[in-house]
Image 1 (tube, one colour):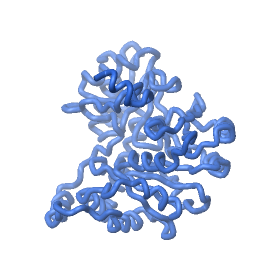
Image 2: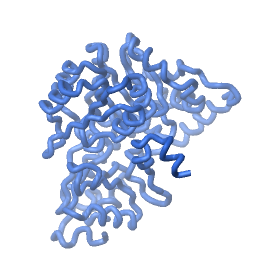
Image 3: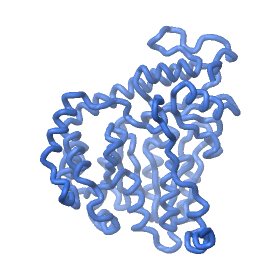
Image 4: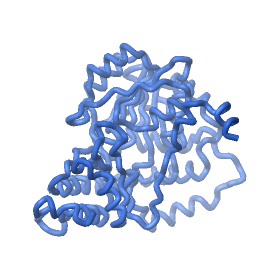
Length: 377
């Protein structure tokens, strides 16, 4: 069987590892940038009532027109722009790659960035070009990006705004320079839009090669798997040709449209997460040996003492807290862990496990000498 697999499976696929999702049962889950808040009980009851009349024996609306209308209203999508729905952002990334994957076509992004840009490009047979971010603050190296665009002529460019896994938002003027310099399609990925005040959504249409991609996962609907792409109708009509039929199931369509009618609930949760982000950043910054980076997302990238990332990750897990260990994934992420912003209690548990004192527990954040910290780990 191995010989048959080797002869039939593409070598670049055999060289990969499948995307790994760690077991999280029984742990405080701070690894996947999820909204930690559930729906209010009254809202859950009302939602369940909307599901009673669904005909699960029928295929869903192939284009999700009711859901598209709800998105347009809730997200202030320009009337003249098209909307395309995906089973999470991942499917949209796949559709983009399949649409533009001519022989020799390349996809460009910055590193470290969202791993699926590279992986899905590879799945589609595209070469990936990664331009390193500035090492001191993860900002764009604009000249390096512009040089790569001129040299590589990528068909597809991804810019996450804010960026994952670093959490920072790139300079808007630099983004515009890249859009105007690109001969290919530029995708501004605004997955973390609920946690920042900046957006390119209102600028779609100003350039004929710009589309904006978003997801409802970070808003609090990760279980529904819904992403959407906004851009000029001519672009979306071509991308729509590679979309699988009925890609958004009826439960997702009805549930997401219902949630968008109650967007104020999720906006309030986002405000709570943003406030907790500030408190968690202050607490982490007060623990000797830790260097948290400013974030406009719902997570905080933190550099820990050299050579300790694995031990601290394991120690946190033993203490019942699951975070993301990014050490070894990219040279710029050496000794880095990523902490999703959780509830106040979850964040307090994280800070205590790291050897600090949560802000709401007392005024002395991380008091004591360095040897006292990470003691539980």
